[in-house]
Length: 321
Ligand code: MG
Image (cartoon, rainbow, N blue to C red; front, side, top):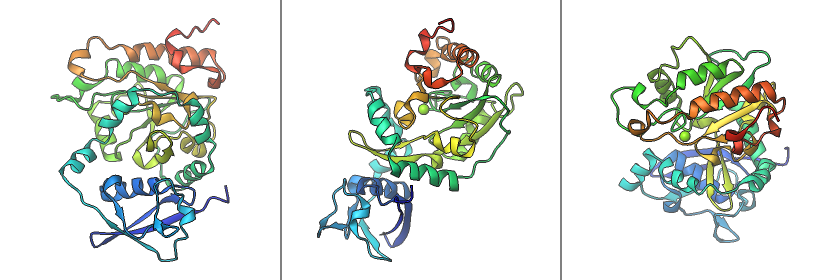
C-alpha cells in the first residue's frame, strides 16, 4: 500500500480555488476531471485544463497523475462553463447511466482486476480512515450483513406522488422485518445524507419498531474508479464497511442494487435487483421483495460462506442441494 501516494491538486476556476484531494498518483487525468466535476459541476468534456502538461503537451485523459511531475504549490488553471444542460445533468446524473447499465456487461474479470488494484485499495483505506459513520443501532453478534440501495431498489424516486407510501416498493417493511432476523441492515445511496434521512422518514423506515437499521452511507463513502470501457464511474466498495466492521466480509455480506456497476468492486457479493419504476402501474404486481425475503432467509440458514453463492441465479436457489 505504501507505494501509492495521495495527491491534492488545487484547481483555480472562475476566481475561486478548489482543492481536489481524493486522488492518488496512480489515478488518471480522467479521474481528476471527474473529481473536478464533483466539486465545480463543470462536466469533464468541458473542462479546459490550461497548464496540465505531460511531456510539454496537454495531458491526455489516460495519463497517470503521478507522471505529471507537478511542482509544489502547483495550481491547475481551468476554464469551463456551466450551462443549462449541465444543470439538468447534475440533478439526475444517473439517468444516462441507467440506460448504460441495462447493457449489463459481464464485468467479473475486469472487476477482479479493479478489486486488486492498489490505487482503489488506497482509496478504500482513505474512506475507512476519513468517512464518519453515524451508527444508529449497534451491530449484533452473529448476524450477516445486508446492504441496500434506495432509489429503484426500495423506492421509485422519479414518479410524482402525494406520499412516500405511494412510491414505496411493495412489501418493504415486511422485507426489512424478515431480513432483520438474520442480518444487520445498512442503507447505501448515491445521494446525500440529508436525502437519505428524509426518504427513510418518508417511507416510515425510521419509525418502524419491527426492525432496526444499523447505519446509512451516502455518496461520500463511494469511490471513483477508471474503467477501460465505461470511463470513470462512482462505485460502492464494501471494503469500506468491512474495514470498519471486521466481523463482516464477503463470507457473510450481500448487497442489493439495481445498478450492477455499483458493486463492480465486489461482484460476488452483489445482487442486481429488478428496478422498481412506475410505482403507480406496478404497485400491485411487484413482489420482488417478498421473493428476496425468502432468498435471504434461505441462504442465511443454509450457507456458511456467501462466496459459494451465485446471486445471478438467486431465483433458482435450492437450499436442499
Ligand atoms: Mg438505485
